[in-house]
Amino acid sequence: MSLPPVLISEEAIRDRVAELGAQLSADYADKGNLVMIGVLKGSFIFLADLARRMSIPRTIEFIAVSSYGRGSKSTGAVRLVMDVRGNIEGRHVLIVEDIVDTGHTLKYLIGVLEAHRPASIRTCALLHKAESAEVDVDIDYVGFGIADEWVVGYGLDYAERDRTLPYIGIVTPDDR
Ligand code: 5GP
Image 1: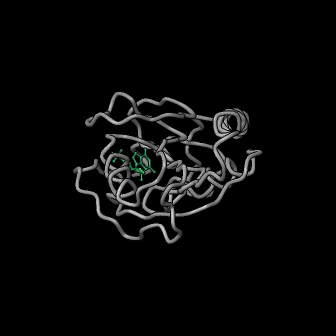
Image 2 (image 1 turned 90 degrees about the vertical axis):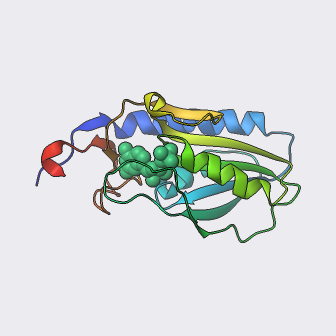
């Protein structure tokens, strides 16, 4: 089995994550302790790297939603598997997602987190498939825009495969 072809290299990811970290640190400089909420499982590597590239007080939380499994498209039906555990009421919140495709998941997550009554909610996604948008949802911080292809690595999987690849690769039809 060959490795997936490179779409975004390890170096390009590192540089962009550093830029996002600096931008977030500037934007939230005077806002107190930021709650960064990683969406499991795909965002765990991005969140770990991003959080370590920031210079402001920050807290890490996780939330988990059902994914739509083996390489298929979102139906729009998203289910909450694990809510945040810490109290985020009155706090500034940043949702950290691996990838936004149709936008259904992010829209659903914003609704779930709004119920916790945070001071604000912003969104950050490493990858955005802009052509695939089905719902209108704001992504405040985007790492890279990509075309509508199934990508793996840097936290993203294909049926649990390739999650720990150090780069973002493309799953070719032969690999499916
Ligand atoms: P949406 O609800 O925006 O359609 O989908 C968001 C979720 O779908 C992501 O959090 C991710 O779990 C999954 N997803 C969408 N596109 C891809 C992709 O190209 N690769 C992987 N590994 N997951 C994807």
